[in-house]
Length: 171
Picture 1 (cartoon, helix red, strand yellow):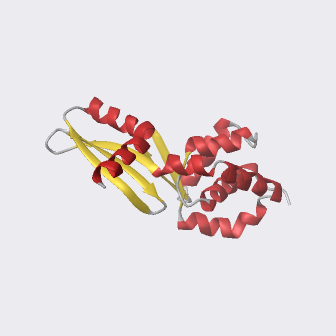
Picture 2 (spheres, rainbow, N blue to C red):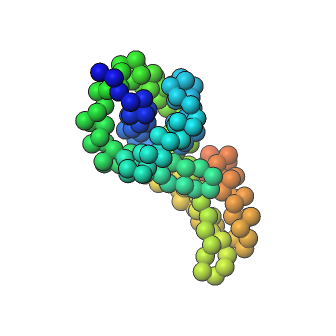
């Protein structure tokens, strides 16, 4: 049975998102698909867009990072058509997720966003999660947008140090 290549690529993305308990970024998904040379960058963009348009996946954007997760409709679709993904591709995905597990999970577990408050200031919200549990949620109010953005960017690289400092200081 011949199938449309776009359908296969969509099923690959759905399978990846279904296999993890955290959200994946576009760069994480594309890293796998482009590294294995399953398709091109432009085709992958079309696949992601189609999956969003049909509400099989949803996107959450924070600063310059977009995180994707599978929807219930996406899970249903995968349960019906997932058998169209070849065993070799499933093996490749499973190995990628196993080898990169900590790296992928850590990137999804740390989030930062900022927003303008009604008083005209900005609030940076910094979150670290472990599975479905928030380990820390810090909100910092600052007078300027560039400060809030800088705080959010720093959180991605310094969150472990900050969390460790808080734990040592508070306990």
